[in-house]
Length: 130
Image 1 (cartoon, helix red, strand yellow):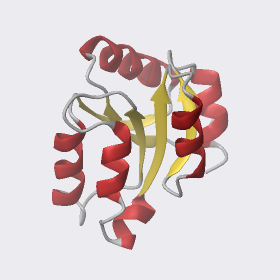
Image 2 (tube, rainbow, N blue to C red; image 1 turned 180 degrees about the vertical axis):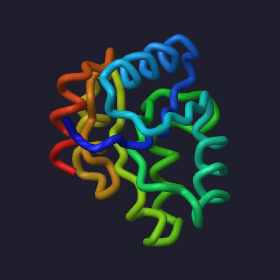
Image 3 (cartoon, helix red, strand yellow; image 1 turned 90 degrees about the horizontal axis):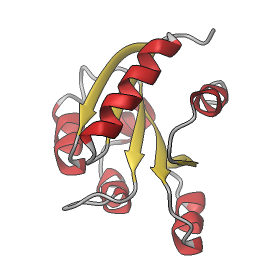
Image 4 (cartoon, one colour; image 1 turned 90 degrees about the vertical axis):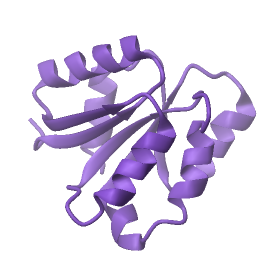
């Protein structure tokens, strides 16, 4: 089993946040889980907690109101390298838009674009690669 991971979940669907949290806890791979239903609030938290934030896995929904997943990444680009090094970002989406898929693929900050609904075996396999 991989080492426990700290998770930051970002999705505007409280139902999805609840399900992801339950799946992650049940899988036994979580040290902590911090859910956010706003990308802006998550980014503010990440920046504010930079000095104490543990290395974390971010599951970032693409389609969010206010600040979508790509806008989050644009702002994330501006944070310190130390903070960037603490976060491993996976984007979650049900998109079939080739532009979105390619944009996620070429981003230096997104490890992978994972399809919704989240499949834990796939996430666990991806986590062993980081």
